[in-house]
Image (cartoon, rainbow, N blue to C red; front, top):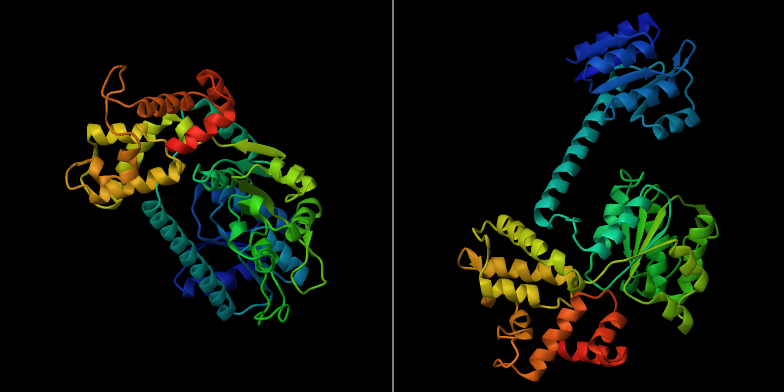
Length: 444
């Protein structure tokens, strides 16, 4: 490895250099922070050994300057004034290891081995992330839809802050995808992004999953568990389907939001937490507050920024580009030569109301690509409901089409061009409750 050795003691530099060169590493010496920064500006180094006492310079400040110049540099701090507090502070500021003076060549070798293992682990994580990108459809947040553009604009303007954000929308509209995008654009992007699904467990198990528990807290608690809040420390905790959070847990979540404090199940010790909260729901939380199933003060804490994602049926301008994007992705993933759709299949895809939103669209196109025997996905390759919902018949007045088919097609087209049900009902000349029943009847 190419190593930068920063120490103001020439004799110590010489002895460390000899030890490192014996291990077949290349060593460059710097007597102070200024020289070290000049060397970093003109060369690449794998590791730096940094003395915390460099004359009048403060090693902790130099550590930050080195990492700003070379973010991937592994810094091993060395000092004759070793204390636990100094070690913790050095690691907090970005050092990867800490060696108290005096140290032996074997201790240097062990430190280098730890750095090597860390590099391998980072490389392995990057490889896994690349594999995930080839398995999961790429996140495409480009949109022509004005409502979606407005939602993304608010989300990304709030992303760099510590603000709590509540994402609302039907199932499958991409709330989880947007939560990850917000995290990636935040100052916590390098820290964990942890998801907890609120409807997945009973209230007791969900509390343990969220906050952790101590051994013996309940039957089956055979060891201490830290929980998702601890796992997300310094990063983002995403609470999916927050509207299903049990009432007993709501005041505890409110305390976490207000005071950044919590207790593990079965423990009296109060713990501090540094997590940013994002939440998502497909429920009307104001209605839940009115029904007494959701705390009003918790809602106001959660929706500092409330972002509503429109359903796919209201994003007609995006639908064709999403369809084309997904067919290319799944063709590449499955090694197929599929390049598009038959006219009949494409028409059905663009006319279908997509009650399951983007999630349903992805599943349908993946199925179509897998089943396609030609270079184009046909209608028979798609799920049956896509062709059945709107059969390919002429919709001209006086054509061979039933009144129900005409009504269903007309309502679908009006819905696709209006942002809210009230507007669509006004255009159709019916009340909202009647429109709701017709939507349910026609699967819109």
